[in-house]
Image 1 (cartoon, rainbow, N blue to C red):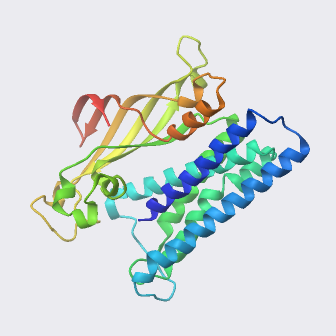
Image 2: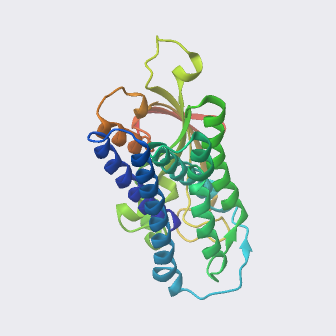
Length: 302
């Protein structure tokens, strides 16, 4: 549920960035232009955040009973795939915001201070809404995952002045959603957000950034992924279907990937598209490690 709103937020920022690239083709940087751009970025992100949070409060939480602010411990749910999703979302919301501020002429320090922390701030506000809902509750483990996503972006900018390790996402449909579609999603659009069995979260590492050799194309990455399956509920406490919760299995992956931002082009619009889709792991040959010894080769894995 929360990540549905993250997708909306990312989409709004992406539209903003696309519009910025169009301006770049007609206007040259100037102090007055930078001030105008800065104002556009601040106003757009503020309006976007307020609209998303107010809409979330009115359209979702209003249907559930309120409570005093409280925390819950959900650190053992969904085999921590939801936490990987929080890290991923916080990282990319911060990255989009920092890139928008960079376009507006803001200093590197302020890009990191006010841009890269956008994801953490937005998701923390969502946690507050959770905390006042009797149905849910604020989660310290969610907050920690949000902080980790922001830290991953900021630390790389401070150490290397580039993003060498990028969180990515991939998805494939599973039979588990049919067991509990109300929880895991009826449609593909819902399953993309709800069915953790089909979600894989990756850390995509750019090889040339570390090895420093021209024999490897600049856009070639190696990706390490994490997923799990056998989940028809948040935890193992209550068997719900013929697919026993005891069959839950963690999965680890090793695969090739592409850093789309390393593809050289002079087209601003194409650069924006590459930045947006660099959030998604491309299908590629993959080795899956399931359990302690079993290894499976996938010619193409989504």
